[in-house]
Amino acid sequence: MTDLSPEALSENEKTVLLTLASLPPEYATDRIYFEKALFLLTRSGVDELDVLADSFEAYDRGPYSPLADDTLLRLGDLKLLRKGTMSITPDGTKLARDLLGDPGFKRVVEASTSMWSVLRAQRFSRRDLLYLVYSLYPDYAKASKMKPDEVASDRMEHFTIREADVPDGNYAVFQSDKGNSVKVAKKDGRLVMSPVAP
Image 1 (cartoon, one colour):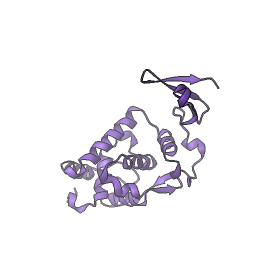
Image 2 (tube, one colour):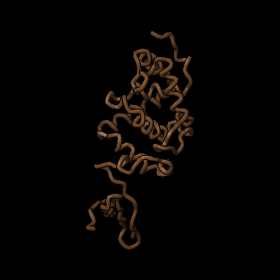
Image 3 (cartoon, one colour):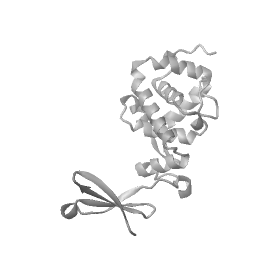
Image 4 (tube, one colour):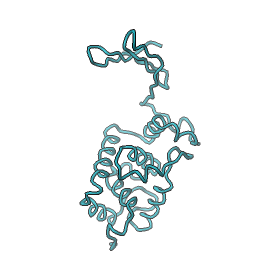
């Protein structure tokens, strides 16, 4: 058992440890998955994540944070994270529990728990998450060396506006990267979607 106290950790180390503590077990072995999820988490509007958010840059595999990477290595060196995985050790779990009482990290815990719940409920695979990140944040994908099939999703599509006719009909047509189109019209104050034949 370690004698580390929460005060021995930097703010970023505490943030990453708490995010890892809320990580579902099936995601605990994939560093790329964790890194992309952490990237999305830093875009959630939680002020406590600003330093990590600003550290992400476009890299070989999309958004990458040298700061997050160094933090993960340090957590491993402190024996709070199992080397080669994204799973925390019993010492890491104990320290994370100690941090849960810190009101300064309440929003981080809520945001990361919520994010993991959504990813788990939607059964997001690594490819689905990569696809989502690359679609929502294309500037971070520009330097990527990943092949298109490594970031393609079998079940997700990215739609962009192909045609809009607001004055005459109050509708927009969105086309996906897979060639499918959907018409979104406003009818009686509600949005109604219908497929468009190719």
